[in-house]
Image (cartoon, rainbow, N blue to C red):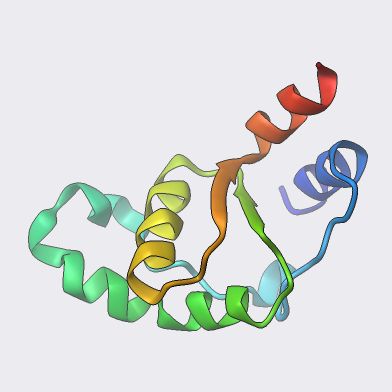
Amino acid sequence: MIGEPRRLLNASVEAFEEMTPNREHNWCCGGGGGMHSMPEYRDVRLQSGLMKARQIGNTSARVVATTCANCQLQLSDLNEHYGLEVECVSVTELVAKALN
C-alpha cells in the first residue's frame, strides 16, 4: 500500500511534498512493533527515529501525514523531541477536512 495514500493526499491537500528517500526505500520512524506502548524503550525509539526526524526536517512541510496510528504517535514524539515544528496527522484526518 504505497500509492493509495499518496493519491489521497494529492487529492486532499494544496501542496504534497514527498520525503526522500521514499516508498520502498523510506526510513522507518522507529515506533514500529508497538514500542510506543513500552515506556522503557522511549530513549531507544527517539534515537532510532533520528533519521526520520532529519528526513522531515529536510522538507518544507508543516504537516506530516501517515496512515499508521503507531507512526503518528512516534512522529508526534519525534516532533517534540527534535523541535521539528510540524503537525502530525493521519491521512484520514486530511481527507475528512478536504470533504468539508
